[in-house]
Image 1: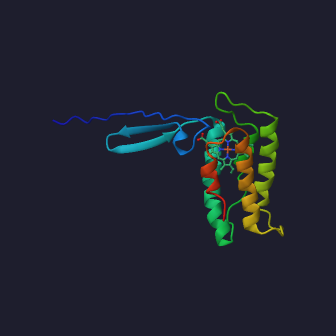
Image 2: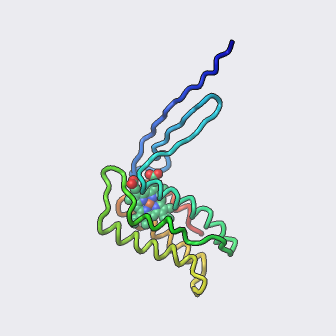
Image 3: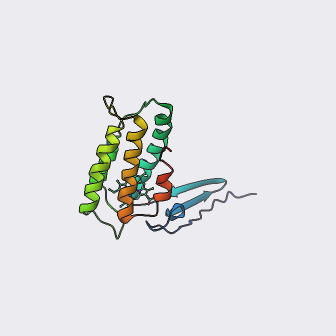
Length: 148
Ligand code: HEC
């Protein structure tokens, strides 16, 4: 008689702002034949990943010339979300997060005379500007969001 065996492996990779890609604290759960990748992180890190995923989709829309989405109110959590250990909210962060939110909203402004792709790149460049101040690891990943 074969007994159903399910095993769970936890693989935790290093996590920090200092290196790219591999930096995510990744927990891989293997349950029988199923494999789940679970990413853990602070509220801010989770929000950031959401912002990255959203802009990856938005990039395609901007390139096709029509936007079907709206500014995600969820992004406003950047003003309150909790950080990972060793990081905290400071004046520089608040300054750049304000600028970023304004720029991201402008991507959805219907009455703008500035070309859509330019407004989109302005928002992404503000992700990069803030990251240059204290969290350089994800920069290569963020740069891929830019429309060349
Ligand atoms: C105002 C500064 C600021 C802006 C703007 C900003 N980030 Fe971040 N980002 C951070 C900080 C600080 C962290 C680290 C958060 C933590 O570890 O709690 C971070 C973390 C990340 C991470 C790593 C998340 C993880 O898994 O640990 C990614 C990816 C990221 N940001 C992408 C983006 C993208 C894409 C944008 C723009 C759409 C953006 N960020 C805008 C400051 C910023």
